[in-house]
Image (cartoon, rainbow, N blue to C red):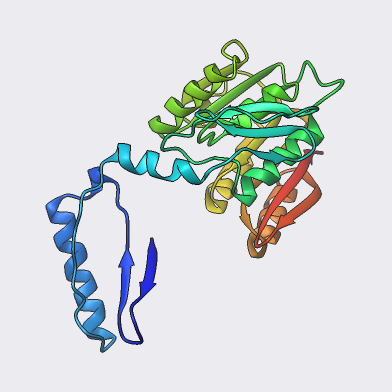
Length: 261
């Protein structure tokens, strides 16, 4: 959603809805609700206009603004449609997110990438990792590039599963990243570490179950968490036998690194 001012008394608001939710009945109900809200607030009745945007146009229009970007000390995130620049000493991560979340530019994604870099590397070649809510698969691919032996990527969104499969193959990691549609119950074995970059409310619901898929002494990397929500998440972790080892922040966002006690 975005807004644009047109003088002191005019503002246009642009909202984007998934097509499958934008039925005529839904649009009529939304229009009625907006008009009712305007009346209650004593504001002029808004003028509404609907326009269909093809998914292909939406998913391609932003690509011209995305350039290769180094993250942390070891990774270079490069759009799949661009030739990578020279990257001595960095691991190349080719990415085409499609319509899934995760380009490497959002603070929460970067925090998770840097945390994975800290957890993986020399001496961790046998480590297995779960990526819960994998989105584009950027964290799964990064974990494998950084040394994880096997990564289990899960997401409830079929578009995310499709994007993760594509990016797995794009980076030549078909035999090291297992992708499934679903959640924790679709991780087939206990793992050494788990990364989860989704909504705080979802993380809070999952915390009691993390111990069912992470080995004793294993680690968690959690983000998608606002700073103001960090205390609540930390308390829930500690109540479920996780010790918070570090809190990293970037702007209004943070990342919690925890280990099972």
